[in-house]
Image (cartoon, rainbow over all chains, first blue to last red; front, side, top):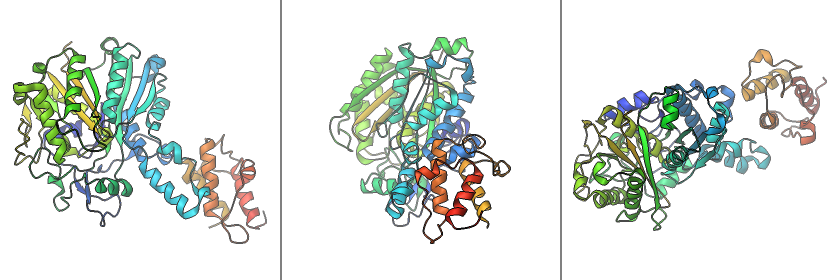
Length: 404
Length: 86
């Protein structure tokens, strides 16, 4: 696994920061945001793509690809995978992103308006398009199996993991490198999310701005980064002597069929995603002891997800250690599902549930056990990770502690 | 800065190559490892960096760009457009 996040640029530093309840939020430094209603974000700190890519590759790719390829390299290294020792046609790459190369889009659009069409770079389209991370990862590792991007806003990388899981489970691939990346801390993207009134405007207190399930929450905090996982069949992983962190064992995908940006108020789409995921895994609601929520810190979303969890799990819901890692990382949009699945796998491996920070006065309509403020040793065996996206896309993934 | 040096600096920056590799006879697609996209971008960078002999932004038509194979070709082409003897 590999992670580049606003609270840590490596898998280990990310996990340690999650357990310590560290916030990645601060003032926007990437550009002058003084005219914006929201001037805070969870930016990456001191990330240097040249650690993983040469100068030329960095120059001809968008930051979205920098994050994706760097995390992909970390994941392959962490898996001790020798890409030359596999059947390339049985190795896939599926990488999601909500928006892709919007920084490139903004720069090239400016060039078009200011200097005309002849000044638009030949790299404009290849740098911007969302599937280029998957394409470049294939070039880097030589994987020649299924290769594409998934796009479903904030559920993009959860869809990537779901597809990867199904491909491995169906026996089409020995392994799939999968995850997501997002690099949307740009002027146009921030302006757009501000216009949606989706973002927290707690500008004077950024580290307390992302406060899922708290009564004083006022929107999400935009994040950026990438999470990548190497999903393999158990047989393949064992045969090559891989270190197995955990088992992905089910996925459920549904739609709200309700509204462009608002969640269905009773969480019906989310309810069905969790039910399909559990059924796919052959598990019952009582088997689940941890849920990493979508939990973005928006007014409607946190209530709808709480209702959905109570509907699926009934009285068992109160026994589940629920959390929102977005309280620390901010919302990594298309990368969120993968980064949060990494948190889930680490929770199953280590027994520790990261906290939901800033949960000081719970919203009366949010009455689950959200692991407030401090981590907890709970030894979970089965966990869900929920991801929901603008457009009404819902994904619930199931993972289990691995026992050989 | 001389035209030669400016052209070489642009090539070093755009292609991420070592300055020592950027000799007059070095070919873009062979010696300097540029692909078709790199070469198109390099042409754009030359157009942005240089003017023609009337002081307007340099325009390098595709048919001219196709003939620029080496660093020396690029330097000579730009000098010619600027009315500088080569």
